[in-house]
Image (cartoon, rainbow, N blue to C red; front, top):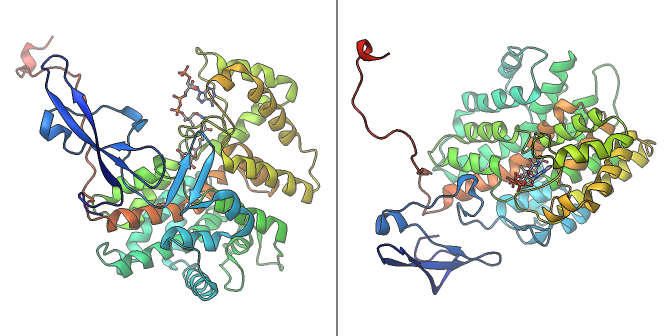
Length: 441
Ligand code: SDX
């Protein structure tokens, strides 16, 4: 996609910027994509005017051109390569979605068989990584283990780190998708002092992951097909989400030419934050702190209090000003899993439903368009599956790594791509002379 003939269409439309003091004006091109907001192309703004744009948090900034995922936050729409998330969650599976995000189309039967085979045959870890993981304390947060182990993959897999080689890029992408569940399951086993369970080539992705999480060498372990299906659907729902904080972190790290494993480790670090992927863990902690549905109004009041730093975890979103379509699907899965496990009366779900009901009726949340997001229900499902709270964001990372590698590949393949290097509005001290020590008071 070159600057002149990118897929984004310069429809000979411009916007005019005028400095009301100097009277100087500048015409800026308006670009249109397939759908969604048009963009003002400011790439030449600084060289033509000496001005920067200013947009902390990037609330109004498009960082790149992408054809992978589209979100309409006002309508609550999420498309992966044009397919609605609802259709994919209902009719597809995570391996198909991985192929779709990486290659742009759903696979045919042979492509799917080949892809699943190639992923399965990359699920094992280098034996030396046993020693690496054993360097962590047993009580390390599993996200710390994920950051360390995934970053360390670049020390083991040198043969797929030449980012200019498309084959290397795809091998590294497959390795990341395939090895994340193994690393995640081993981080959990290590934390509970149980032996590592190796991946099995006869199991499908989600089933293999749950088997590595919960099997022991002492007896055969059968993964519930309902839980495997629920896990597979949750992975699909979390697979990609446009230019969120962790994906933008991966893109920025990758723009310097860093190897893919280091870039994905950076994405994991960003996802860890409670404002982002760490919210699912924070939702469970919040529900456990509320403790009883009778205390829900007290916490709703706190969430609205400007002087109280408490926020309703699992509510609100930078982009969605409607119900997060993933939360709607997750809500349905939540009921199905709890029904299947005979936990229909799970108190946390009961409390979550009460919290959701009150919040959706409350003027503060309605006016600010704060709706439940993807993290609101996922923690309840994971807890019902027996997954410890500290592992919730790890599962988010297992899913999101396919979005990260797809976006990373798209960035590397973009001919206009250059190192990301934002500027600033400097409000520090103006230049001053050095003050020798003897003269400082
Ligand atoms: C994910 O970007 C992605 O796509 C992320 C994600 C993905 O798939 O990658 O969707 C995954 O990260 C989902 C979000 C998970 N985070 C949480 O659930 C944490 C709780 N939510 C908030 O921290 C917050 O809503 C954010 C961080 C998600 C969004 O914050 P914004 O866009 O910066 O919005 P904001 O903080 O400016 O809030 C706007 C207003 C503020 O009030 P005012 O200052 O205008 O008076 O809404 C209030 C906020 O105080 N507000 C909340 C709130 N979220 C926003 N008030 C109470 N509870 C909340 N949860």
